[in-house]
Length: 171
Image: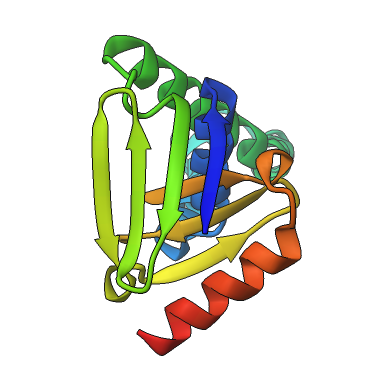
C-alpha cells in the first residue's frame, strides 16, 4: 500500500499538541504546576498575616482568589507555551525532510517514509503504538516521535486504519 501526503508546520504543531495532551508525564507536570503554586499562595497568605500587618482573613481572601484564578487559567497558559515553544524550535532548524511531500510505502516488513531529503525505514516491530485523533493517524516509533498521517490525504481512512492495526498487532 502506498500513501502520498503533505505535512505542514501546522500538522507538526498539531502532533506536538496531541502528544503533550496525551502524555502522562506532561499532564503530571501540568497538574503539579497547576496545584502546587496555589498551595504556596495559601502559605504566603499565612506568612503575610503572621509577619506583616495584613489581617489573615484579608490576606487569605486575596491569595485564595489568586489561587483559584491560577487553577482555572494555568492549563490554557501551559498549552499556549508548549505551542509557542514548538513553533520557535521549528523556526530555528531546517525542517525540509520533516515537512513537505511524503510517500509512505507499507510492506510486509514495515513502513518506508520517503521525502525529498531521504528515506526512513521502520519495521512493524518498531511501531510501538498507533494513535488517532479527528484529523490524523500517528504511528509512534518511540515515546516522543511518530509518523504523522493527515486524514485529509487518505482516500480510505478506515481501510488504512484497519491495515495498520493488523500489521502493528501482528508484529
